Length: 138
Image (cartoon, rainbow, N blue to C red; front, side, top):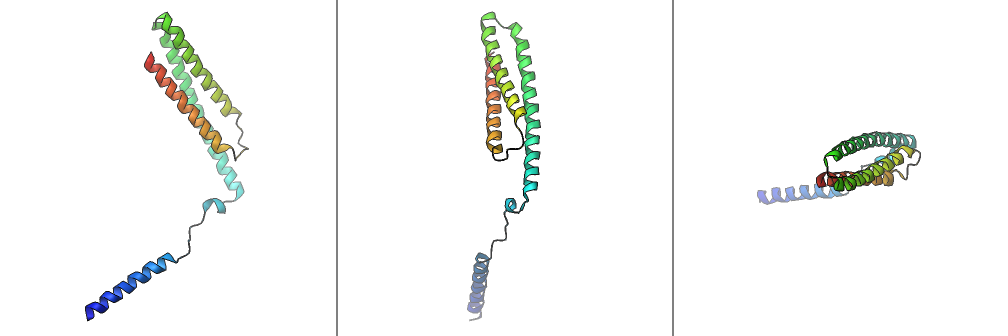
C-alpha cells in the first residue's frame, strides 16, 4: 500500500511540475523592442562602417591578385594572352564598380542596409569564383 501511495504522490508532483511549467508567462523580452532608437542607429552605423572596412580590404586583395595575374601574362602564348587579359579586365571592372558602390554608400539609409550588404557579399563571392576560374584556366 505504501508503494502505491509513494508512486501516486510522485506522479502528482511530476504532473504538477509539468503543468506549472507550461503556464508560466514568457519572460523573454525582445531585445530589438527594448533598445532605444539612438542605440539601434549607433549599432547600425558601427556595423556598416566595419563592413565597409572589411570589404575594402578584400577589394584591395583582389586588386593585388589581378596585378599578379597580369604579371603572369608575359609567359603565355599571344593567342591565349588576349583572352586572359580580357577576362582580367572584366574582373578589374567588376571590382572597381563594387568599390565605387561601397564608397558611395551612406550610413543614413537603415532600411536598405541588409539588401545592400547581401548584394555586396554576393558580388564579392562572384568575383572570387571568377578569379579562381581564371587562375585555373591559365
